[in-house]
Image (cartoon, rainbow, N blue to C red; front, side, top):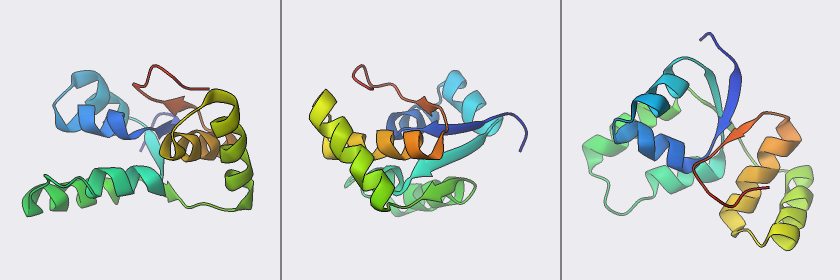
Length: 111
């Protein structure tokens, strides 16, 4: 891919599936990195059809997925304490910080 390396939150992928042009452009024109939490949230949605899950897996296969480690854990704890984030959001935010990749999210509350 071309473009820059971006770390995206779950809601950006949801916007992509809803057909938002801005989300499609971001995902299709950049190198995308996500947390394993984002993959879990998108694939674990209870209302996905099998066909939808296959499409999601195909899209996610083009992303770099980062799994947790001790540095991410420590940063997530600090974010959770300091910003009162949910556990998934603190892990996603911490992963972006540790990997030094800008986080794009639709959330109003982020560090």
